[in-house]
Image (tube, rainbow, N blue to C red):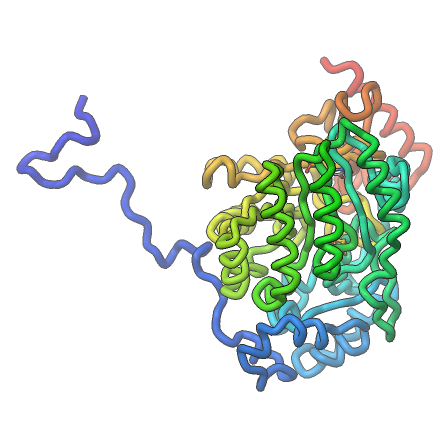
Length: 461
Ligand SMILES: *Cc1c(COP(=O)(O)O)cnc(C)c1O
Ligand code: SF4
């Protein structure tokens, strides 16, 4: 046998086992740059410095449906506008779209666009909700010892200091809490309730087992610099706390803030540095769902965080027509790694009102996970999880006790979180075989399908 490193006869270089890849095919490195926002008539004259100014982005963010549709009227058909109007009517939600986000949508193909799908509902695409869907599908309120603090897992808790976001997503799990802004009036970044915060801090301090706090919301982007500092310094000073994460969708919808809101970034950096001195980890968690959300501007923003030694991890949601193909998910994962963001989780879509068209089957997650693992570093390979409805917490998608692909019911257990209980996830009904779709129309049949799944999970072959 000839070892691969042996010199070829005649002293030539050994033939490479893998031919070099054409750099043009390395799509994850090809980040959108230039003045792409000039495609939108309203921003045709906006120069780069203005577009990078987070204050300009915030001030020009669109916070109502009519203005949103007016902004794209020249770009899309009247049919699309009517469809979106119907969509918002059927699935009312708070609206906030930054000029940056608006500029990333391909308005020539608004029906297919992966960003449009996440933020703008269309009447023609809406599907009936799953009969087993409930508001607060994750049971966050049931696990809250004090308002806005969810203590579900042994050593970590989720703190929700505010209820506003830099964008409102159709698919938000916390639609029970976020988005209090009304149509016309944008409220001040939250009537942040200090008394509520104090109660949460006191609870955290009283629990020696708590080591890890997720600060989410709403969204940490909407905390003022001074509030980041206050929350960060209070928590990092607690002897029991070892780890903290500020969670924000911001980098995906307005990276400009990281580039130009020095007060905010300095406040975050200050907490990270304070943590480092105390040997405690403070990181940023964010939420990119599609490779198109990562541009040259994002890269500049992530570089700034990297230079300050701030770790960034990403949590995506698997969504139909957005990132539910192997190619798209591989590209997302590689592109995240390329800009120094660690892909941490890919979530099954929660059972949320009005977004059945965005959910996928569990099988899709199982298939995509298989194609993603092996494409890049293991530490940049996300774990695909299902946050089990009813408060079971996040489960590795592959770890189901039972999965009936015909009825779409999967059963999980969570021995470390809620021992002895079972948690069910439900595939979207429109993707099931016709016969199962029929059964789901009948409440008696629904119960039979659920009972069968639970029995099968309890008595594996
Ligand atoms: C997701 C979550 C956490 C953090 O869980 P990790 O798996 O460590 O990211 C903590 N508390 C609640 C309630 C959560 O939903
Ligand atoms: S940014 Fe997060 S919390 Fe806010 S609407 Fe979107 S998913 Fe919900």
